[in-house]
Amino acid sequence: MPPVSTDSTRERIIDAAESCFARYGVAKTTVEDIAAAAGLSRATVYRSVSGGRDELILAVMLREVQRFLDRLADRLRRERSVPDAVVEGIVDAVSHIRGQPHMMQFLVPEAAGHAHAVLTGSAERILGLCRDYVRPYFAAAQRDGRIRAGIEVEGTVEFLFRIITSLIVLERDRDPDDTRNFLRSYVVPVIVGG
Image (cartoon, rainbow, N blue to C red; front, side, top):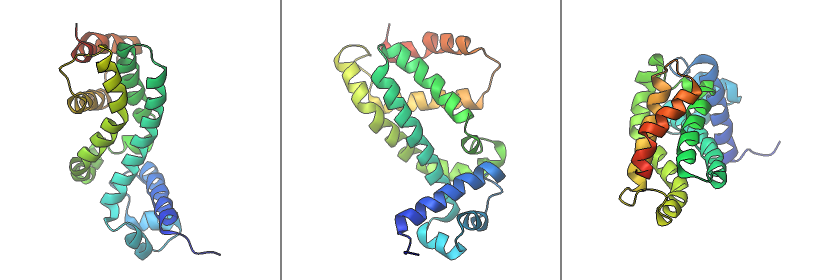
């Protein structure tokens, strides 16, 4: 059997971490669980992922954010109006995260203590990834006068990130059309103006 490259070993470990977080929860998953799921020794996991469990939590989250952003980029290319892109992008983000058990694990109270420090320390990386994806669409919309001239991509992405997070965490028994109306009334005007 040929030697496994460091990149493929790291991906195998991240795959195993994602699976373990979904199965056991973030709080209960250990590096030993991840090593066993990957079919590797604990020492190999630590050699490949020097930051241990915290680095794996971040890696799983960044991978999922990347997956979502790929979908979002496709949506942004198709959407004709900025209000529709904002509303449907937020609705899709909330739905996507709620539909991913391993992502929801990061938001449950039992994981808060474990994941909070990692998320707090890595929020800028996640926001930066989001900004880089949205920046060309944002610049084109601003250049075409479809969004307010005075807002910046950094603040807008942070604002939308906070809205998405609140909609996920503060789950209300709200019809999807009511959520869309809420977003059109209170979020869209902040970005588009009017």
